[in-house]
Image 1 (cartoon, helix red, strand yellow):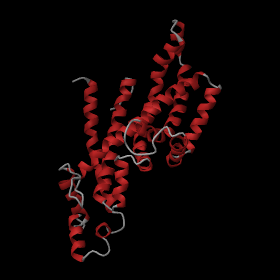
Image 2 (spheres, one colour; image 1 turned 90 degrees about the horizontal axis):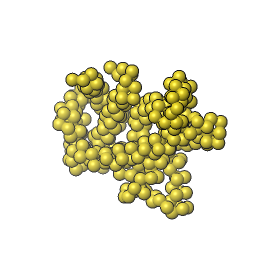
Image 3 (cartoon, one colour; image 1 turned 90 degrees about the vertical axis):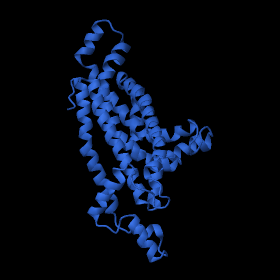
Image 4 (cartoon, one colour; image 1 turned 180 degrees about the vertical axis):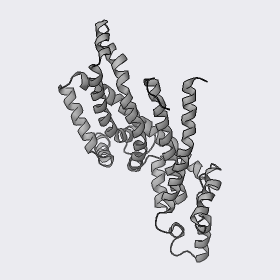
Length: 310
């Protein structure tokens, strides 16, 4: 087996203890929260029999360590991630119905980041001190200063209410995706623009750039064929690490734009005190984040074989 395949196999094996810790942390996070979820679900006016039945269904009548073992045995290893306390439907079905919408939103936000930040960062680096560089600095400052819950209403007010060119909220066509994707990706685009600028400026001073120019290569070929590839390594790092931030930020964005993803489902489960579904949503988001980080580590080696990811 080629060496790179061995590295991939080793990284996948290392995921097992990480996923074990993630599952354990999510279980403890939900079960150590103060309050009685069974009472919150059945209501204060429910009979004692109904209340005790709900506690039994939620396994709250068991000691914590037995709840943990039952969680692994009946929820994780069966692949159901528990069942809805009201409908008795496996949580995995409800989560997977929403999962594609969240991934589409996160990937759309990443696409906006790449499409906007990379060309703008390269242009700012090659025109240092110029008008484009100044604009990129202003955009970066706005991106860092303006949170998504403040940006989203501004975008809705301008593009949906004032200009009437984009829908306010809800799923549908690609037009429905634009505002939530821009809201989710704006802050990251601002950060990546500055990273690309700094990285390109650093690479432009390297010896291989002078050698490529001395060979008669065009400036565009030197910039986009050689400089940009080496400049992308820190960008890939940021995009991989920030993907989890996009998933977390999607919770607020999905709620504002009524986007039917895991984020909005998580908020619904919290409002309904459905701790089993809450646990499932957090677990899927966490595992997705771990998998994306692993893929990012492996992508380093493709961009620069000198990097060891073992």
